[in-house]
Length: 194
Image (cartoon, rainbow, N blue to C red; front, side):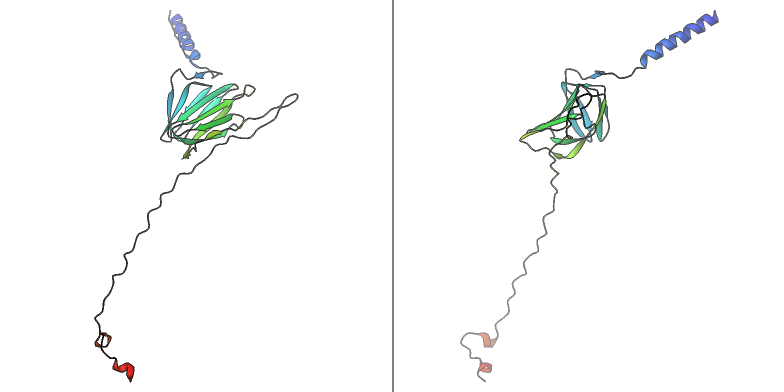
């Protein structure tokens, strides 16, 4: 009886533990129908819904990292208009646009790619309005081979340094001196005649 009970406990434990262990696969993270807010470096970013299909997303204090399989995408917006920079995969295409009130970044991983890790950081500068900056594209190969592309690009506007106003020094006060007798009008200067 004890052996049967012990066998049942072990079986329940094994069945209960192993299903919890799984590997991430394509589309494991699909952010819902509402926007998701993340905070990176004190700046709130919006992962726009329903525009994120990823394997994983990990948010750190200074950046966030996404694991993007082929044919996945991510769109991030910010009302602070702070620029973003990327490191990791050069094959993920990055585009951005900037208005007076919002910056939008889109990250696309082409269908032919295996999983790519992309680290995204918030920069100190803000975007400039008036256009879309595109970049990226990558790799090619196999058989007839395809072309490549460059890395991502964005417009960086450094923060404006604040310079204290120079201190002003007061003008010297005007001095007056009493007239000497020789300087008075109508008085003859005897020393000049000698």
